[in-house]
Length: 374
Image 1 (tube, helix red, strand yellow):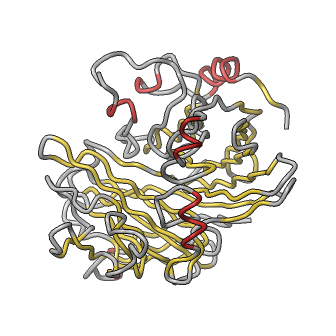
Image 2: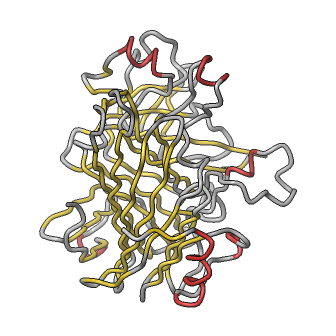
């Protein structure tokens, strides 16, 4: 892959692909534009910061970690940071105390480094881009291939992670799509095919007790909460569920704005769905539609001691020089104002079909997507 410095690539793309939106002002980006949708990747951290329909500028992935800064009203610095859909690598959650002292932050280094991007090409009805990042502390290299369909509002991603260390090592890789207002409000519905789960707020060493089943969870008072919804109370904040089907999927439906965003992935690659919720000033502020290799939000020493939860792994191992490849796809649909959310999703013969809750077949959302995964 021919690699170019991020800023010079951005200037070239601005002319060819209509540029990034105001959120990305003065930042190095890759912008892909098809006939149905536009996609923006922020190279200062590698986040997919914007994905919207060509005829509807609303971006579901509008969340920006700068909103948690000490002064969110100030102009954010140009430094790399997490936005929208970001990648957690080499870990999900906190570092150990010793690692923290050495400079490792939450969710690893992928959003703390500048990514470099290669050439953009159009092939087989898709607009293809590649980008890569080096994680110096982790000793990992990640290469991302992203393809936006020219005709339909979806994109597919494959990421390859290589261990550049001379010794093998543990790692985790979690996708962190994050939706925010105005797409996210009290009426937004989150659906998924998660099954058995547990609250991250439950005490160690057995947080999986008691177990819950999607979309149900328990708050700190032991009261049942339906995670499809979020209003002014985000307790419990993070709940993790295993996937029992061939493909994992999650959707967020916003009847208020008439838009749905969804993800699909292979459960063999990402066996966990992790639901994060956050409210601020009495309103929904952020929701994480996360999926990945771990369901336990703890440092590696605790993961090793725990081993598995619900007979699912909570970390992976990469030998020296070994490369792991994982993929997912994301899509948008327009929905009516009385949409009830997604009951099921199927992917067969190159077609995505979403069945509405209590809906008739004529309300199915259908998209021809072809081959999504290698």
